Structures are given as C-alpha cells and as structure tokens.
Image 1 (cartoon, helix red, strand yellow):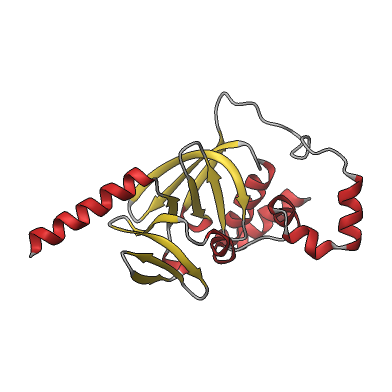
Image 2 (cartoon, rainbow, N blue to C red):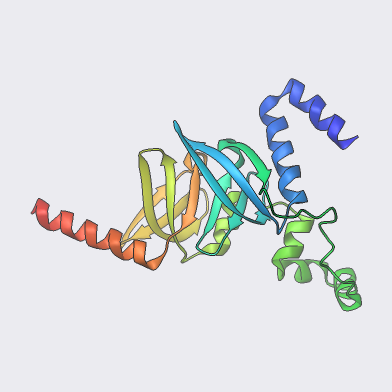
Length: 202
C-alpha cells in the first residue's frame, strides 16, 4: 500500500516522489552501510558511509574519516553496499527497556530530546535544525562545483553562518549542495595556503 502511494505521488510530482523514495530507503537502512551517487553542478560524486541521521530534506552519513550531510535534492541514486549483509528488521539491535517505556509515558518531551536515536524516530529534522546541534564543528560546504567554503559552524538560523579567521559568512540553505566535516590536517593546509597567498598579494 505504501509503495503504491509513493508510485502514485511520483506520477504526479516526480520531485516529491523522489524525496519520499529516498527517505523511505534511508530509514530502512538506518545504521547500515550505503552508497550514494549525487551531483554538484555538473560534477558527479560518490560517497559511502553508515546512515546516521535521516532528515526531512537530507541524509547524514558517517565513516571512519568524516561526517557528511547530503540534501536529497542533489542525490541521483542510493544503494546498499555490495558484499555487506542487510537486515530485514531495522530494530533488531534494540532490547526492550521497561525503564525507557516509563520515561516515554511520563516525560516524553524531556526523554526524546536527550537521545538522538529517539528524536530521529519521533520527528524528522531539517538540515537547518540538525546543523544547529553541530555548532563549533569545522566543515567545508559546496554550493556549486567551483565554490567551496570552509569554516566553523557558528549558527543555523535563517541562514547557515560559518566563521573563518574571525570573519563570518552566511550561506542560504537552498544553496547548500553538500557538507562534510574537515580534518585538522586539511584545515592546517588550507590556513597555510591562505596565508601564503596573502603574503604573495602584498
């Protein structure tokens, strides 16, 4: 029935249908390895990782090196990783917790707000609300194939605000095509290159 509804929506609104299919796929593969093909401008990209957060308009993947945010709008396709077993029951790793059940019945809001895995089950975050929980994280952001910005997440209100070398920059969420955390070595290399260019210019 659910599949039939998505198919019906896809016939009338391809963009909405694609979003629903992606969201359904990632929810079914939560905490499992997937591969995602996406495009930034005319450039095609590939990313593999474990499904960490399934939002209303994005998916977050994690691997040993980084954490990435990919808006559904840029995703071309998503698949399970070949050679890695899948699980028919996405909740098979959860044990019945009577104490948690009591807390959910008596202190629902407080209990859910303190646990990310519960927040993801009860409501879908947007990219904006999710990034708000990652303040002070160093990231690099693509808004086009030729435009990459690096900075520390400062705030996530109407726009995403990042800071770099004391300067603030705002980026509209609809312009964001891809975000990934940045490692200290890459950050050091970027800072050195920026400093070197500044000396050359003077």
